[in-house]
Length: 209
Image (cartoon, rainbow, N blue to C red; front, side):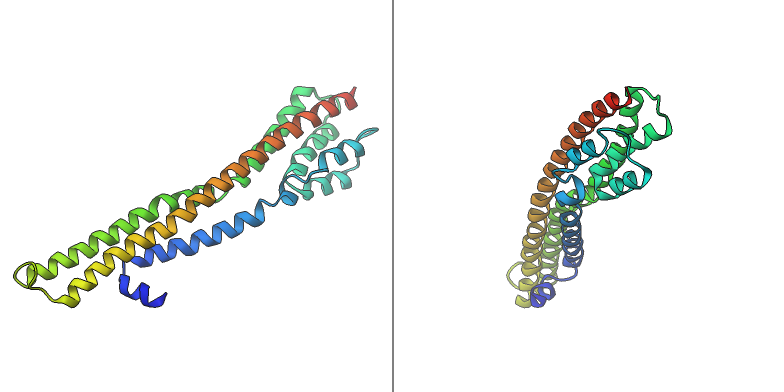
């Protein structure tokens, strides 16, 4: 691998940096988007069960908020009722929607950077290709014409061009695949949060009455 990087020349180093950053972002998103950290399967039922008779205390609400992203959204409704017991259903919904927007922003964190890498890597590979071609024609022109140049310089220019093109695609393709995967996963989570929030709002409205 090191020999390939050396043969590709300096244009490949931005691609190496992009590949390291993409791997870090992919690993971070896999950890952050685990179901247990975003929307545990039974959390909504448990929150409804705990608040079926009366509002739970601040300690229980705090534990719910720290449980997951969904727990944070549900806890915002309970806190709104604690603060203003006579609030309307629209106020409850507005409070939970505000919490949901903050959660959505966190879930979408790093996706823009991953998409940027997927778009920029082929362009960086193309830049390396152009630089390699410039080296080829520069060596030929300096030697007095095509076919009379230094074979080593010619081979080096070709290797720079081809290695950078290939490495740009190697970085871009996985980045694009994982960006689309995480994008669809976040969209599914946001739908789950929205539906769960609406169910919990109706539950709290009945409880308030």
